[in-house]
Image: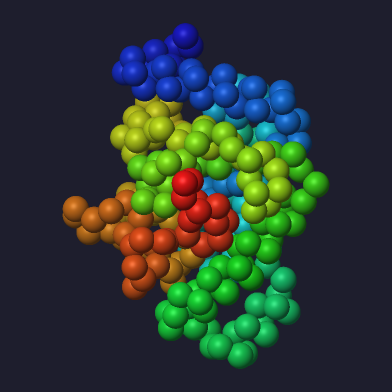
Length: 240
């Protein structure tokens, strides 16, 4: 075990070593695999693991046009720390402008359908471009994050986007993520220190209150039962 890993409690150190092995294996099996990074805590742990393991996994992010300045600043942080800059995918500007003209700047507050339409334009369509022609992608999803993720598999066939999908942090807890960040000095979005356990677009994310669910700050005006944006639409289809 590395000296860095030995700074962790034994159970978390085992998770970390397993993660290093997992990302190496993913990169070996799928040399075109990519990490979809929101540059939040989980994805920074994965970026650190990919770098530490020298895994053949690229990193990209989706700039929706409505991200916090602190999130965008993480691009420079990642480049300075790891010597890579995530590839950035943007939404189709004309499609976004047409949607705003028709429905208004903040239509996503009006209905779930309009919110999902906004997510579709700003996130799902760019994601399709990012994944086109690839054999696998990696996410920072965890079962603990939401009811829609409570049966999340560490590896699955993604029927929505048509490739293999890996969720290597599936069984990790929020505490596991932060123990690794603190022990290994992983850089993280400063919004986490301001009460944002989950970070998305600025108008759709707020800090959580004491006792609230980790994703309570995402689309807080909606029901808590189905808070997915479409990037992980398969989560909404429960196995029979």
